[in-house]
Length: 329
Ligand code: 8YV
Image (cartoon, rainbow, N blue to C red; front, side, top):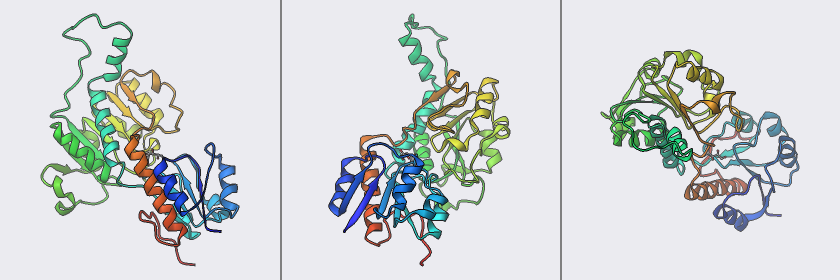
């Protein structure tokens, strides 16, 4: 008897400790495939399952699941069919807030890294091709004075805006889904008078750096496609720390190859861990392996929040970070 938690991928100790103080914990030795996860959720052995981004929790799995909730070890929850969970009375939790600054740091790192050609520069030094200072060596571009366009204006976009303003960038944004509603001065808070809301088309056409901060859903899948890329400035750089499928990656490779846009800084990919053909060979890209939230502190905090969500759900309470509100039976 008592609570039984299923953890699909080992999470840091603070989370595991909280869970084991509240019940029995089963940590899978390796990430489960879909069938294994579906079987475990349907077994009736577990009260709550702690998932990560690669666990697909879709409508058929949820229909057969005998769990009270799913606690996602992530702020994003595009791996979970939340509507289906709601219909089946299954609570979903996530981990907002704790990874905001770390992810905004990575967005800024990609802006600076693409602008100043850091990957090319590093490779040149390692390859023994640095033959002494040269006036024309690896000229990049200034970020100060450049226009940063933010697609979305949630927590991570705002934290990115804060950093970009510190670097002297001119920040514009379009809320999510792009262009859907005006943001009042009150909602802008500390950013009132410092950043400007523009329509989506203006954001696309006037950004020197276009940084994506929207969740992945049916409105935002391939938000940046060949047509959008064609409207960007030829010297523009695309930054993505959100979700890979927000960009049509094959179209992006084409645009980078043919000079439709100048570069891309990507922390996420359309079909992780695979890259679209040709992407890795392009010099005008900085490519990171989905490390936006990868700091020791953030992972511990994410573990803590996902454990707290799981424990609350197991106890029949609303989790501190609830994504849905199931329809009462
Ligand atoms: C996580 C993320 O590392 O939280 C998110 O939504 O994308 C990353 O910070 C990843 O999702 C772990 O499941």
